[in-house]
Figure 1 (cartoon, rainbow, N blue to C red):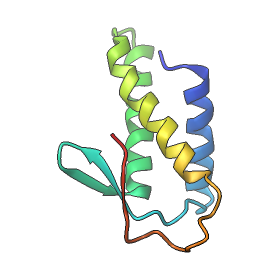
Figure 2 (figure 1 turned 135 degrees about the vertical axis):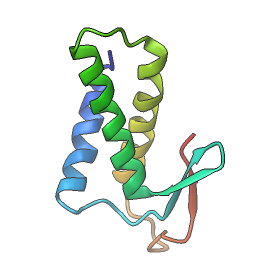
Figure 3 (figure 1 turned 180 degrees about the vertical axis):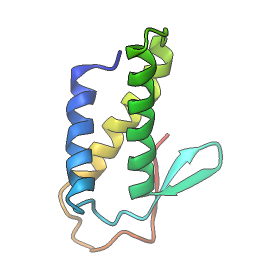
Figure 4 (figure 1 turned 90 degrees about the vertical axis):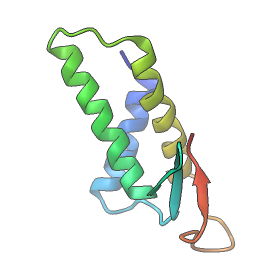
Length: 99
């Protein structure tokens, strides 16, 4: 199962998403040539966490390797979302590596 720190981070980014307070960070490189908007990367990561939780709650095994990726992604997304504002303004034109 995913750790308590990752669950806390999920709660933080979920609240920012719900409140419309996610920063405009532009595009996130999610690996293997895929790029998503920052908001969509948050939504996809939260959806994967919910999906894995439902699978585990239904009694199906979910190995630690499956929990690893959304946990790491949540850590990075939360750190990016909660970072101090950058003095050079909106970052919507930049591409941030997630993976």
